[in-house]
Length: 329
Length: 294
Image (tube, rainbow over all chains, first blue to last red):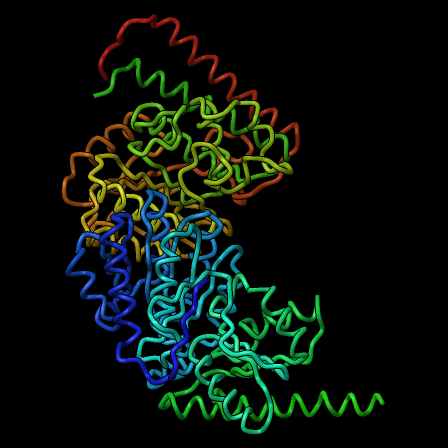
């Protein structure tokens, strides 16, 4: 990996969905095995540009997510590299058995993109709000699960996914993300990135929560707490070495994800640490509840997916650790 | 047109598939007898005459593909593949045993000659469509064959696929429905009545034919007609008998996944062996000539 960090984490000028589509167009121009499938959301994700360029390699399956995944598996069996897209809810939950058996169990190369994860489903509301998509996909043996924080990481991951074999799941926030990386950064699937070092606590985040974690780290610094930040964009396979090192060095871990705390990044980190290096831990995310409708900013605040909430929970965690140490003495 | 001699050969192949399937199931004492027996004739026609395959190159890209969507009938397909030379007949005795290459439901990663993993009903139509689309993209003139169960047609995904393939005019997709009128819990008419399946497929822009599902000549003829169709996918509704020619299972209720004693299966094996003997004698008597055109 070769990472160049952005100096400022301002909103990017490009939308993630445009970077997604343009990257796929670039990849498809170089590799005629790449095909895309969509379930009546071509306009929604801006896939029309791909369709114009490669009409014969674009399959709009209509509102048929289960059929779409099966068709993708069949195409993969003939040597194609399918990228199937729908909203995160429908791309995973709605067609889970097809992903599990027709694609993964069959050992076929099927790449799935789920957009509008968690609070980013905003005005579509609770019915469309996936807080369980990563949990479902993590439970598929061998699947890769990634939740990129910005467009540079997204484009890099798409390229890497197109080069690997098997089932992958990419979480796609469609709008402008906060800039984390400069162009030219080189990523690796399964390798997390340390964005900031911190001796007191490490915040391990993914997706839109990476920017919140960086803000939280600034706020904590003002209180004299050195909080490290790790972008764990690959939720599976987890960068075990990085997580264990962070836990060993800082002695406290906070996870932050736009997802249920059950089954996602927080679970993955907790599973690893509890087996290999029990470490005080707090998991920020949706606390085993459904989503609801509203502006994304409102939902982030309501569900505790903000820098401010990370600060509160981190201070609480460090307070608990201190209290326990004093009690022991 | 198919000659009498060729029909005789297909009858022998069908009977050998039936016999090997029963011997394969015998080692377990239970299995999906009903649905395996009912597709024997279509398997004999596909692998004995219709499908362009190379058993020594099972992944040959230009081959015709078969998706056995009713994956529980895997044992009948395994017997067919073994008889075609994909793997030794002796392997059939490992069905469902630890470490086997022959699991109860079809698995493309385990079994040589299996084109698609199936078992969760309803999924095979979508993968068969994907295969047809992939081959069409590569300008191949091969076919994607698909065998659906009738109970399987309860699944919504089947009709998603039917709608999609009809819309896209997938003329390189030929499907069969094993319409044996029975599913696990009883008769299809009592559980979810499927009614006139050919009419239903026709409505979705498929070229649909009804066919006597154990009549080899009728199956051959229906496939020939299906291949003449240039603009639509084709479906052949095979009117079959669940458990066909297995004396303890034929047309019996509860013959989906059944237990049997050694005596029962031995009797069935003996009956089918006798059928095979008679067919071979008849073939020998007819001699090596071309035989009459039927």
